[in-house]
Length: 170
View 1 (tube, helix red, strand yellow):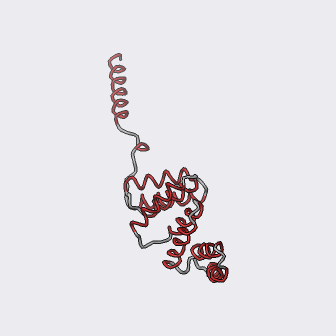
View 2 (tube, rainbow, N blue to C red):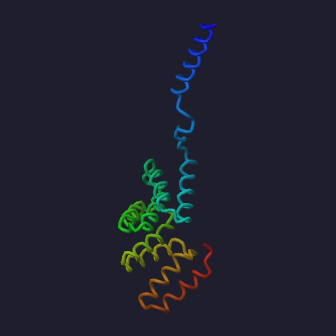
View 3 (cartoon, one colour):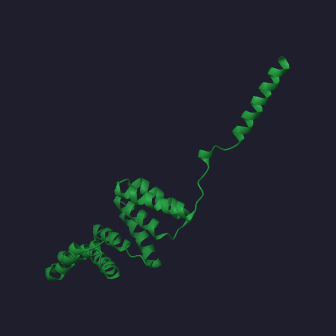
């Protein structure tokens, strides 16, 4: 009987040692497929909308660690940095995007807003002009371009952009 108990205890200890050597499934890092990165981008945009800027920044930086040229991740990081009061760092990210010159120019509106907040009205206007040219139906681009012209006292030139922003489809 004693041998049977010792045998059972030895078996239990062996199983416990084996199981402790196998990493828990929850500790495994998920496979980083294209879908993984798309999900991280969606989560980053959601975090921005929920004003959870630290989380958005963390998600964007996670994507950028593997994909340093990812336009969407750079845009999320820039917007998060700006919202966290780190405007100069956000501008550096936007400059990277400008050098990449991606087809998607939607980030230019956020760049212009950042420049305006940093006191660069002329730079902001330039970004809004580029954004409106790239996407003439963008309400945000047209509104902000109109606002820049209005701030310069060019009311007649601003009016059509305000009208376009009201009629915008995106």
